[in-house]
Length: 477
Image (tube, rainbow, N blue to C red; front, side):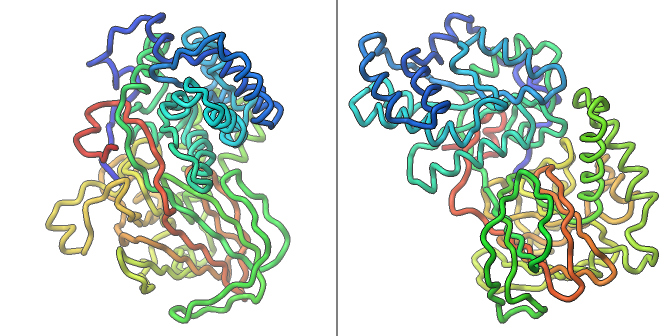
């Protein structure tokens, strides 16, 4: 976790030090020869990297100049209200149509498997231009945190398959919270003067330094029962036998279903996820309400005040409203292999495991603890690449409200290198969870435990710093 740049937009992120780069100069810097971009597009559409690569190699005489700083852009045209389609057209005018992909047409997994595979095939045939493009390539993502996470997750396959290097990612914020964008200096909102800002953000994408970011895998093991409605961030694995650690008790089923996913900002369980779940369903049922980030924030705030924190208790008995009544929290500390049970205050109604400094649209619930406090609690200063998650709690509605307007910090619980949640229903029938803004309703059993394991991925994601001031406190490659 790390301190963040709290500028309100990419306009303000760049206004103090905009480079004077013209449209033609920018295209010369980032442009990729058409024979290569065409081969990549055909490979992705046909899901075949070998045939298009051979055709591009045959046309090698049509343009061998290696690009200085090759860039491709993915645009979520459904993000940002009306801005998505306009931004896509503006980007295509700036750098060329073949280097701008609409995520409703091109799947990032296909880009990794077939688009980059085509470049690698050309490089293996001796195409120096394709080799240089593959080695220098950078990616811009225009969308919200979920879109950025989608790209990061797809690029993670390059680590798994040992296909180096992994292209770093820059961000044009089109979402509601944009916490990843804020944390890496790309701003928190889409700017009014977006036509100028977009050109300069492309320049920053090719010249900015690259940062490391921890990635965290979540595994949810549940008793075999009816399937649940999974969010995009989770995928179901084959049913498996759960092996219980001797360290913690609890009743576990002999056979269970397992779901896995990866998050980059936060995982949470409790009332905040319940409110997010209700908001997402409301937006799906009445899409005309969601006309942009500002409208989403207003609706979300109003919905949160009427559903959950203030008006609707989790249970009729106040003693059962806290998460303590349904879960036990275990952690592993840094460089420790032993599980340690952590006390959960009975007033806590939401638990958040945070990787970044930003949460909920630029809020800083962990705060900036003083060195004396850190030493007293056994904590360390938080960074995005330190291998630790900051775990905090939100209590009743007023406490959550004061935390979100940064009048007080959240309830600090602990820092952890690994987390295990053991959940059993009792009077509860469902637990609400979310990862990076994607919520789901998790049925829970009163007889057998549901287990949530969170562990750091063995590799880190790469993001480009949009604001050079981030250099003061972020690690760079």
